[in-house]
Length: 542
Image 1: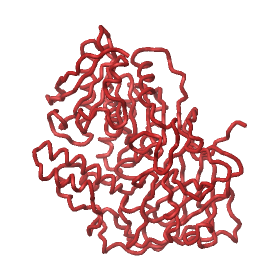
Image 2 (image 1 turned 180 degrees about the vertical axis):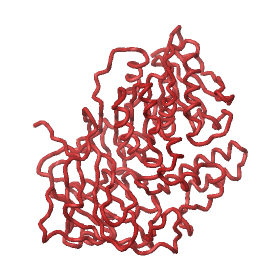
Image 3 (image 1 turned 30 degrees about the vertical axis):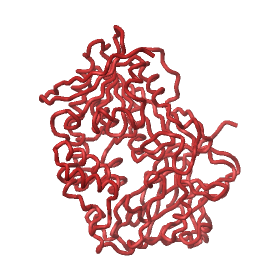
Image 4 (image 1 turned 135 degrees about the vertical axis):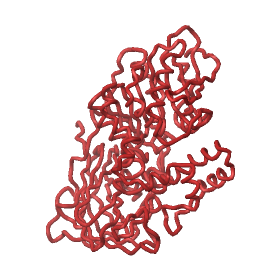
């Protein structure tokens, strides 16, 4: 590694005259060096500390590293309006960074979450100097994979993130009383008001954050295209930077990361890495499980290899397009593409699948007619089912949900024990046929591994607004070698509170529903050919 110059701070002006401030680390020597850029919403001083090596580590690998406060954050001027200035400001910053002294004119971007999505927004402006990006754990179409999930408002996550952003905005504006209230709310937000989507600090969220707009703007509105990378796909494809996408099996943003891979890989060099992680940290310990040394993040090393190839013109790295962490074998699997569900599995029972976890079965063939029953499922808003591990729980990851599955408002369907080890890798889809007198209801589906000791660890989840008839549910993905003697289990419930608001069952929006409007809801799952899971089983070489 090379020696570094002292860190310095510089500012630039955007096309509309806003001053943006950045810290810069750079190697000693004549160069020229490529530039690595991260544009931060949480203050540039936090740098890369949540998931990556520090900026100086990257600089010692021969890069000029730029950590910038985005508009309205840290020491930068202007007003922070979520995602609305990131495309043009990002493009202006890339052009500025490419002309820094001793720069070779090539710019790469990295960062996760907000810092990941803003890379794609900037790429949509087609800045010539941007040659490679490494977005991690991102939103792609924000009304489908960030603010909402299959039409259901992600209440807890939206309130939590908006509270964090609002507290920082209040601090920057000198409203320290509001900052203190928001800080306290972040440590114990209650969703038990008359309208659960309106927390006690809602007025401060409306004043200092995007929360009200996201809550009150329905999916499909033109607003979401304005701030979503997906709407810029054609322009990103014209620029065609190299892309390294990074996700986690238990990350809340996994659907966006996977959809971005499927869209971008058709147009430009794109690689996908998915580890056994939640949003952060990226470590071997997740939920109740230690998945081994191989799971400890090597994303820094992967990114340096990636950027060396595309920004320094070093020899091409021979790497598979898709690298998935296998949570059963505790090792990485290299694939040529991201598989989708390809094998049907049919749930059925004897009518007691919500009462006895031994009653419901999940089989590869449609059961005989005499075994095809409607399984009854009830939501009592007094005690709605909640999350347990997985993508929605806190803590997330493979947390034993056996007690949750034992609830009488959760249907469970379990396969026979595996006769041999077998790899499950890719995304899942569910199709569920319901009968109900109620106009609408919610559906929470979880696929889990049941180990030989009876522990039930979530693998992939999905949540959606549903109606009588068939509901197609896009679920998350997983990668797991299911070992001999282990089983898979599908669990279904009508709520996941407070992750999502409770559906009142009247056809009215769960977002605006009040506690007095919520009612006991009963649905009947029709077991048979119209209800199934699509599981991504892979054939393994013998």
